[in-house]
Image 1 (tube, rainbow over the protein chains, first blue to last red):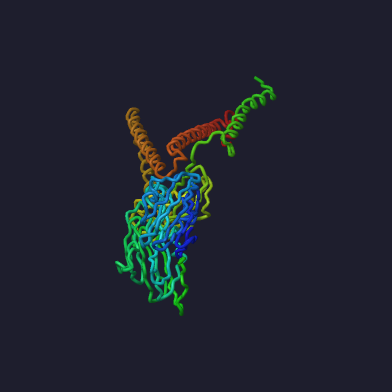
Image 2 (image 1 turned 90 degrees about the vertical axis):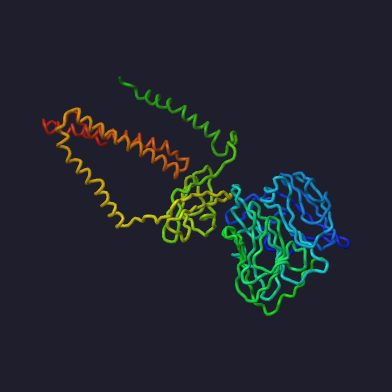
Length: 282
Length: 259
């Protein structure tokens, strides 16, 4: 299961700006997605959501895709790439089929990637998705970064999601609050991959946040505490807390928050800010 | 005619042998561990048999009525996932039952849907149309029902018995009329209770218990049992009468009639 992830990027650098990744798709894992509930998840690299891939604008990204599942799968990236790299018509066969996706990373922003084999709802619903982040060349402001994929599971296949979550496990951040520092800039890359429901939203307690839709601009579009997403809508959320304590963040669609999409930030007062520099392979 | 003891046992054994062979064959073909015939995907099932509303809690009684053992892992009211307790434990073998206690502030008169999810993610739901506090057995309740029972049961029957002098003086045909009326009434009540029993079993009982067959079987068995008891009592009554009249208590009286 994926926890939150400071843009953990598995990148192999080769030459100047080539980034290579290997993604393996499997569809026979049964994982405990909620206490006691075992669900057959289809995974990229063994986790839901799949690995967060990160590159800087202009890098050549090469992804070796191996399909070890019983069904056909592909990877479809949102972003700029040639038509042959779109992951729609080049179906990768089951049991070891391979394909190499190669494109120049762009545009700047946060984008989802997911399987695009029919029925797409089924392939996404079982867990074949992940996040692809493209950083601007000049970089963003130093911040405490994390990735949240909003997802849901229909475990009894009745067309309605039974569980909702941020990063797959319902109520996880409510039981394990995310610890952040007071007065430190926090950046969350949020991607909504909830199917079967038209909209989802992200409400934050205690402060308002700057929202960059799709992360494509360095100037925020909204300053708010509630933003609404439809499936595959995403953005970058930046905020700071002035006071310490526990603050909830959750879907303000109370049906979703009652079914697991709710969490807590625990704001600590540290006398000095963490001054680690996050080195993303520059 | 005298039947020799050895041939009696032989008869008994020859009756049982085919059944033994049948049991062995069934065990071989269908029993645990055999893979000769497989009937497709096994679907688990649980039934929520009873839902009670008590002070700040909703208590659901659940039974595993499916073909495989399950674990009850999540409880929700109206799709809201809530922390709940299950007694004795969440693993239910076939036909085992458990009590799920969900702390919840329910409102009287509102409908609720109680859902239970098992370990493979399937959710089973029971809808309650109106939430009403369940009746707890207390001395007050019991005495209350005893009083009602007296008013509705004992007293009308007593009043009915007062009609006996009138009935005994009626002519044969008029007596038959009242008898027919009574039989008709009883038939109506019988059919109406059978209908209600079947309805209740369809709503609350899982298919595995076969509600309709259960109602029919219990009705017929009760009838036969009452008939049998009636015959035995009549015989005992006759025994007592002959005893008193001629002081001879030995003939045609089997005092082991209760055995």
